[in-house]
Image (cartoon, rainbow, N blue to C red; front, side):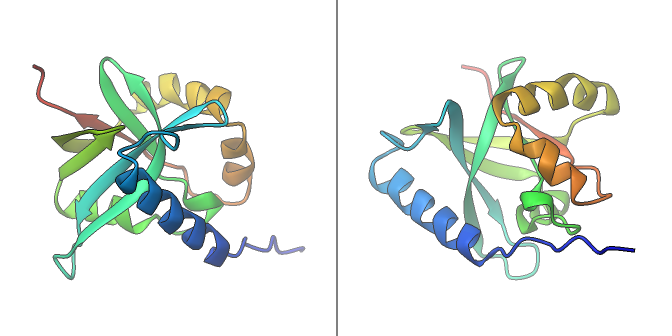
Length: 147
C-alpha cells in the first residue's frame, strides 16, 4: 500500500503568520480579499495555555454569519484553533477593520452538506485536502450579535 505523504506545514505557518501580521497592520485592506476568496482573522483562547491565538482563515457567509472550515491543509489532525473552540466557544472575528465578539459552533450535518459545495466553489483546493485524509473537516459557524 502506498502511503500518501502529508504536506510540510512549515511554509504554510510562515505564510499564515505573514498574512496575519499584514492583516492587522493594514486593518484588512489589500489582504482580506485575495485570489477571489475572502479572509478573516479568528481569535481563540488556547485551551491549555490560556494565551490568545489568532489565525487568518478563508470564510463564507451563511445566514449572515461567517463560516470557516477546519481543514489544516488536509492533515489527519484538527487545527489547534478548532480544539480551542471545542474548549471555549467564545471567539473574536476581524473582517477587514471590523472586530466583533462571537460564539463558534460546529455546523450540523445538514448545514455542512449545504456549505461544503460552497467552500469547494470558492476554493477548489479543499477537495484535494479532503482526499489526503479520512478526517471529515468540520465547518464552524460563528454567530455574532446582530446590530
